[in-house]
Length: 415
Ligand code: GLA
Image 1 (cartoon, rainbow, N blue to C red):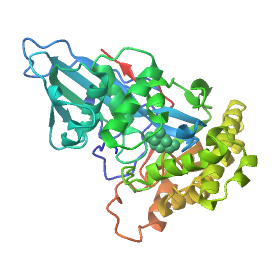
Image 2 (image 1 turned 60 degrees about the vertical axis):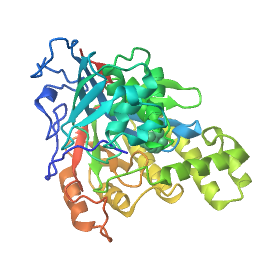
Image 3 (image 1 turned 90 degrees about the vertical axis):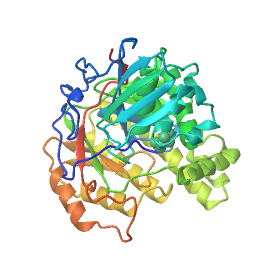
């Protein structure tokens, strides 16, 4: 599902506000939580008839707490990060062919925009990654002028940092979407459904579209209301990769969603239910799924309060509890993610840690005091954890790689 990028083989820390290793020159100069400014570029071979370039930036996101709550009308508290996708579109009204290059992909892709049709021709768009762009053009409607699209990304591969949402939102802006962040999120969520068939919720696209610098985004998915919660500057937000690339296309995500819907038939939307409703669920699996969602929504509210009052011990404890609930009740963790969270728990200065996003691989997120020895924790993780079976999703070069990320602004059209 994710937008893959080339990564370096060595783990490293990116100083706050600086681009990650492997960034292209166009990403240089990003400040704390700011949109990277792109120096004007001239693409060689610009056609005389070409229209002005349009450039957009969309961040990835990390979810601090509240997973598998969005499609249950619950609550979550994600934030946008200072890693993301930068796009330059050189429209050419003379052609319907869109040529796409990406620093993450070895070969370019081509899409004929006049041949797109929701649910029919999209499955024929290859390579797979080009489908996200095709899907956005499709759901926007009326996108017929091709040209050249150049993409650079600093988001790590298969990490659960919403690289596909970033790609979708950046595409919509580059192709001229104008409107409020909520409508942009709904449009690009639909594109994700069309591109992948995975029935994802709206957390990723909404965070990418609506986040503000310095803040987490407290989202109530029942009322669809947003509140901006300052992230204390006394802590670092650390994202650390388990080494397992994540894919939602395997069907586990849809399975969990279906289980939640089955539980909701008895007790209503799980995000609005309470612990008192749990005995009404006879099926033990559905009861555990519901218990995760119900308690996770409680944790989100407590976490927002803890952050606001500077209670970092309390916030960290809620993150550990969230991980346990995702692992035991919702069963979306992996032995690798569990090992990572345990290593982080034993690391001085780490206040809390949990898997982030859908699970099934990807990253953990931690709140850590400045100067906490995350590099040593990553090294310990690499020493104790090796996959028991040779997994196609395992990447030794990603295991333990980490980023200190800044709460950042949502997507923007740069020019
Ligand atoms: C994925 C989905 C989101 C959300 C998370 C889990 O990232 O795209 O909508 O459901 O998983 O919280």
